Image 1 (tube, rainbow, N blue to C red):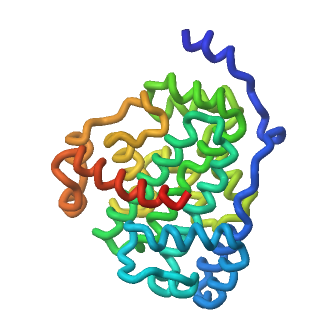
Image 2: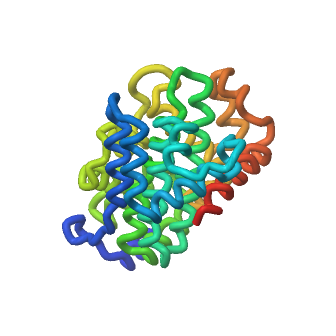
Image 3: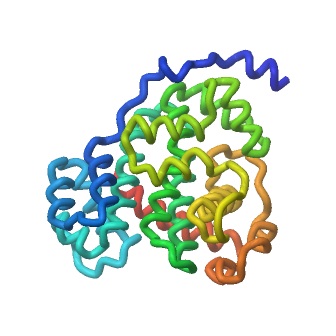
Length: 285
């Protein structure tokens, strides 16, 4: 049955894919905030050159997701109150959303978007129990599945059908993506990050978030993204709705105590908290 279903798909070589660019201002913001000597005035001037981009940034800054007590009316005021790392996350949020507008005909694009946002928000929470910067964790979380978004942009209907029918583990999804597109979403994301000249820190996260458990401690950035991805799937924010995932109890039982302390006892409570944050961000669009 799987073989017959696969015959309905047509491979599209990467060289022939027509991909929309990542918003230039978002790329330049990411490059600027990655430098240690960046100033708030430089960043404010850069963001302000794109009226649509800066308007979305201000809308999100003033949403309930951020603890801003008085309305923020200028980009400089906004980035001064949030800090450079938070601005990095906002730039990625607006950039990824703009990119996904090219996949509006794909029923899965909204699921991919919400999955990425959920991963970012969960990673941000988990980073709070370590020395990891929350803005960096959020940024990595929202960028980790950009390759999946690319495949949805390339062939919206076919990729939506591809995701809807899957119940296998992620490794099987990657294998089938390679059969269809000659590369999986991890490799597609890596190539996008290179083409868009995104900071190198994203490359490892994007290309290896489904790879084996290597590296340092439990709160290494890559480990946090893997954890966030699994948790997003478990509480109802999977990009592939039928994807098999472990139960909330199984997942939380494997976590260090300092992580478990951050989580509600019931998955519905965590899902409700994350959904409220996502809805606040989406109100900007």
